Image (tube, rainbow, N blue to C red):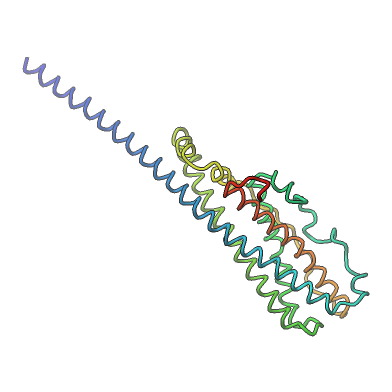
Length: 262
């Protein structure tokens, strides 16, 4: 009888131990899921702020490019307009982008952000060239042009860095919650979080396209030099408008606004 009692007691401890371990594992799993969801929501808040700042930078980029174009137009000969290459000669023309807002509204968030990053990366070298050439440009306002091109370059770098941080931060959360956690944890955490954010999480798997810039220096001829400088700026003005428009669409979707109000 005593032996049976001891056996029953030991069995009870084993069962209790298993139940305690099971409860602890369940509690841990639920805690991790909740923390992951909180993390995702914190990224959603950061996303809104970052998109606001990115939109402000893109507004400034487009404004600067328009101002620079006007500066050059004031001292641009008719011959220069004739010599100006067609827009199809811009080094980013091969990149397939939406032609207007209606088309952009139909493009997934991941593709829009990839297009923005592709344009930013593809303008890194050309903007450096413009910034280096501006001080000696044969133009009476070359000092102002140099100052604006430098600001243009700085804003581009800040915008690109901000978007890179967003992609790395959000894609890391995606890998931890869906790829790393897998199964029920991924489904549980995502089911509790915003639909828009869960869509934007996928951007980490979409690499931007880099379009190489083949020009390395401007011509020594005065008219040719001004013409090519003007041409590069006109290309950038067009692309900066695209960047600004795509970011506004992303902000609109993040705020869950109806398309007609975007």
